[in-house]
Length: 93
Image (cartoon, rainbow, N blue to C red):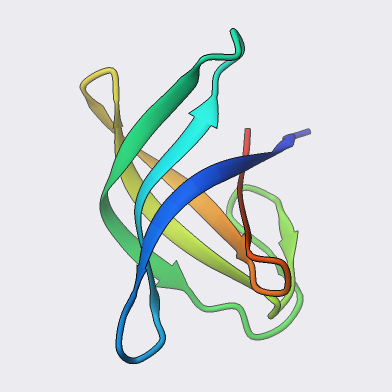
C-alpha cells in the first residue's frame, strides 16, 4: 500500500484562479530534501469520489495534477495531490 507524504511545493496562481505547480521538495529515505522542477503538468478532473491511477481515493475537495519530473536524468510521471481545504500538497509513494 502506498504511503502519503506531505511535500513542499512552489506554485503560481494564474489570473483565472488556476494553480500551476512549479517545483516540489520532499525528503528521501535518508532524511535529505530532494528538489524537483516540474517539467510539464496536467490537472486531472475530479468531479465525484473516485480512485486515481495510483489507487488513491479522492473527492472533489482534492485537486490532482499529473506531473513530469526528472529523476536521475530520466523523466518520470507522478501524481501530485492538493487538498483545497487546508492547502496541503502530497504524493503517494
